[in-house]
Length: 130
Image (cartoon, rainbow, N blue to C red; front, side):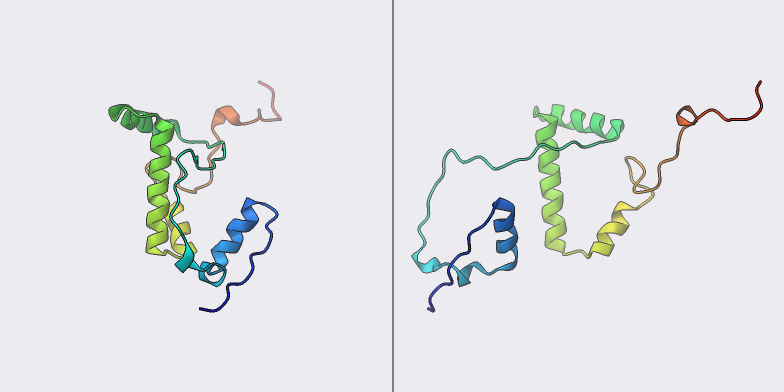
C-alpha cells in the first residue's frame, strides 16, 4: 500500500465535514491498521433551530407521539432522519425534490405556494370615509 497523505488542519467541524464529503478516506488513513473503539458517553452534536409548522401538523405529530409514549420532538427527529436517508438513497435530483415541495396538494400547509393574506392582516383602505 502507498503511504497515506497527511491530513490538513481544520479551522472547525464544518470545514472538516466538507473535507471528508469530497475526499476519499483511504487516501489519508491506513484502514488495515485501524482498531475498533467504543465511546460510551459520546453524545451526537445537535443544534437548536426554530421551525414553523402548521398547527394541524403539530397536533397530529403530538397524537402519534402520545400513542407510543415518546416526546414529539424525538418522534419528529426520527421521521426527519428516515426521510433524509430515503431521499439520499434514492438519489433524487434537486429538480425532483423541488417539485415535490411545491406540490399544491400538500397535506399540511401551502406546499410552497404563496401565502394569501387574510382580511385581518390588511391595512385599512384609504379614501372614502364612512
